[in-house]
Image 1 (tube, helix red, strand yellow):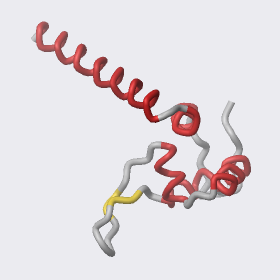
Image 2 (cartoon, rainbow, N blue to C red):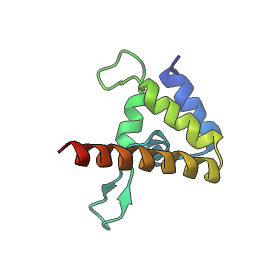
Image 3 (cartoon, rainbow, N blue to C red):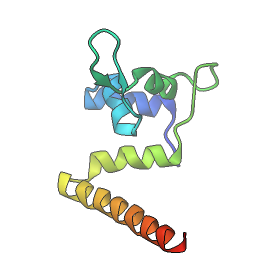
Length: 102
């Protein structure tokens, strides 16, 4: 169950966020801004998610990106830290297992 472009645009308006800020919430990696070298999320990617469905520039949000967006809005900083800690643990254990096998 993924939102329509219109629903994503409505969410953005309700939150009062820019396209770059919404791109961050979805998890798009920031890029270096040419004007001042600051790292910012790419608002153009967010605009593709909110473009009218069926247009050449439209793109559907993936289930994973929508889940990540909802998690960013629903979870506290402490809860998000627990998730990030679990991710690090999973990677560490996988690396340890791969090192034993090699």
